[in-house]
Length: 63
Image 1 (cartoon, one colour):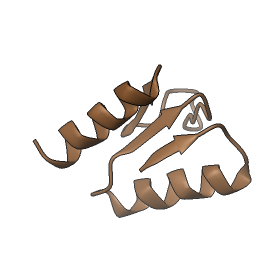
Image 2 (image 1 turned 135 degrees about the horizontal axis):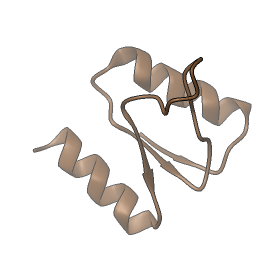
Image 3 (image 1 turned 90 degrees about the horizontal axis):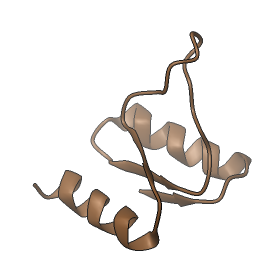
Image 4 (image 1 turned 120 degrees about the vertical axis):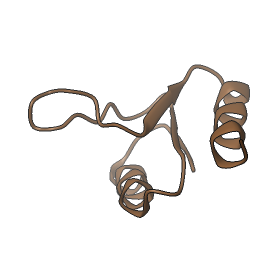
């Protein structure tokens, strides 16, 4: 799952992907998600370009 930008719907999609656990979540210019201690949430990867986002999702989903 590649999220682009960030609004409430995007955040819920990130949460649903994280909850499933088997869907890679890559964020392109969007949310920074932290746990209650301020540490980044495991499993959410940030990409700088659309190409990097696609490459990352494919590498994680189809190793």
